[in-house]
Image (cartoon, rainbow, N blue to C red; front, top):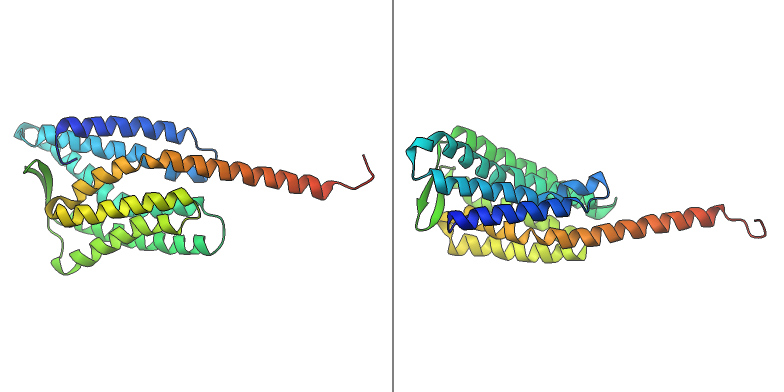
Length: 235
């Protein structure tokens, strides 16, 4: 997170708790990946809390490096795949699921690109103007396009989803991404990840809609099964 160690740890702990409660709503394996989003964001925010503590002290350089790569792996590699795949698993067969599958494939391409650069280029986290800045060199010619594609694969799947509440999540996450990129240019990933982490608490309410839809589907399936097997005049 980009303001202080206290905010980072408070956000991390809060998100972890919300994440556990959200995971408890899971009724099917296909729901687990999406429901885990707040919990994973909690871990990510805790890693930045560790950075706030270790960056000023060179004696903890090893811990700092682990925390730096933990945050960046989540921010740049995990989310471009996790978000579209989590939404994809919630969808039924049809056009929406096919579109979500395309988003997953694009997300994998984005994740591989960022992972490749993360492993090859030196990376350092520094504190600058009350923010954590991740000093990392990416090819300038591809930086603009990769960031746009990153935004698309992490936001667009939410609008493709059949769940109405997912659309609101997409709107808020999209606005936060644009805001972070415009107003916090040098700290965009850190700031946006914090916004997205807090917004991810909406996943709890989305899971309410998902579980209700699942119950309705199950009830309808049972009714159809009973109706098909029923013969008038027979007991």
